[in-house]
Structure formats: structure tokens, C-alpha cells
Length: 151
Image (tube, rainbow, N blue to C red):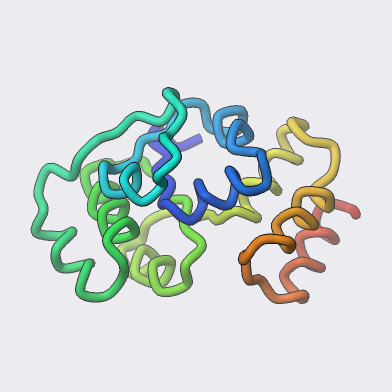
């Protein structure tokens, strides 16, 4: 398990929208994110998500030329840690983090991990809820996740 888990806004919003934000706590314990993500989240983050600003804004400012402010801030914050996992769903942000050799997972990865940890019994009900939001994912990936989890 990584020492620090940093979610971006979209991952938090998705889990909030399917009424499963506590699943993040059950899987990872305390999370850390940036004031930019806190501002974008609007509804107020749970107290188990620690807010930490980026120390050196130069990376964040550079990343903002390629991706949105929240995503740029979490990737910049991740550069300040050695053992970090980013929760990102946006493809451009995932590619940028990948180029920086950062560990990444997304909403479906969290759901898969929750099943592996026996926190949830089935992934399909959560995927069904996700598909009722604005979450975009290919049917092929949905089928792969279901198959991976024996559903």
C-alpha cells in the first residue's frame, strides 16, 4: 500500500455521486489532496481527507498548461512524495502522470481493490451506479473489470 494516496476532483465527485465516498477511506485510510481540489469539490470534503498545498508551484504551473488546475495540483503534489498513488480518471492527466512514472489508479481500480479486500461483495452494482452518472468508460473495459472479478 502506498504511503500517500492523492485523489483528484473527478474521482471524489464520482464516489460522492454514487454515495460511496467512504469506500475511499475503507480502501486507503487517510487521503491527501490539494486546496484546488477542495475548492473544485464544492460540497466540503470529509475530515479524513487532509488538505496540503503544493510546496513548489513551478511544476503545478507547468502542468496547468496541459491539464486542468485540480489535476495539475495533485500531480505536482505527488512529485513531493516518494511512495504515492494518484487517483485519476482523466486520460490526459493519466498520461502525464504515467510519463512521470507515477503510480495511478482510477475509479474502477478503487472498486476492484475494494472487492479484492472484501470490503464489497460485488463490483457490478457500483459500476451500474457509475454508468448512471457522467462517467465515460468503454463497454470493453467494463466487461474486463467484471470478468476480472468473476462477475
